[in-house]
Length: 346
Image (tube, rainbow, N blue to C red; front, side, top):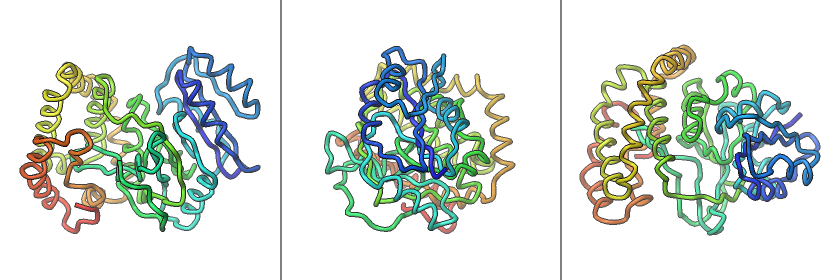
């Protein structure tokens, strides 16, 4: 089988039905929907409207990573293509992703151009830019839709839409379901790169995404908690020590954002710290597995990161100007101390 298209849904009935209607799989492809204990009639609607779709109901909400792993375990395709239920694909999207994997044996994960559903001429993400502090943003968010071009390396794929070699996904152990939601895409991208593979953005593949840009309180908690999990399990101890100034700067930025824009989310930020301690034993076990499988050092991995933060994605005022003028130079200095031969954009 060529490819398995996997969607994970939790109370996304309308979005999911719209996405499924846009899919036109080839005869050698399959569609798998994992219903994460939805209460809005998702499973019944899929059975009625799309009887050829393979539906896997879960009695509990496993989160994105857990649900995706459940779908991947049942998949038969040589390639696994993951889609968010709030996406709509265009003709040839999957063929373009598969062609990029076929053409480049070093490519492990490939991601399309994601365009904003409500602003179709603008970019949602061309992959992700990952900051050396673990903060990640949509690459080229808000830019005009690209005209096309050859695949290009990126810091990470976007979890809203990407494809991965099935053998690589299995070798990596799939998604880390501890994350539950958010940052799984960065985590699996980093683990794939440590294993010697690249992440590519494929401009010829286009998918629309109904993207909500600003994090709610719950989302912010998960983003921060999962960022800490990502850093502790992926980077070597000496790298974590050398990057401590950058991490402290990132904390300053996040706290400044919270106090200015979302003071009600401050308790969630504190809970993120506590969650790291609560998951410490499991985190260290995951860390041992990641370190045992690495094929490159942290210098090569961090060369795919960026040293500047995209402040404009959350603030366009004085705070963003201060960040660009005062904080970014410090981040760039920290990055230069680690990356002897920068391979990523500064």
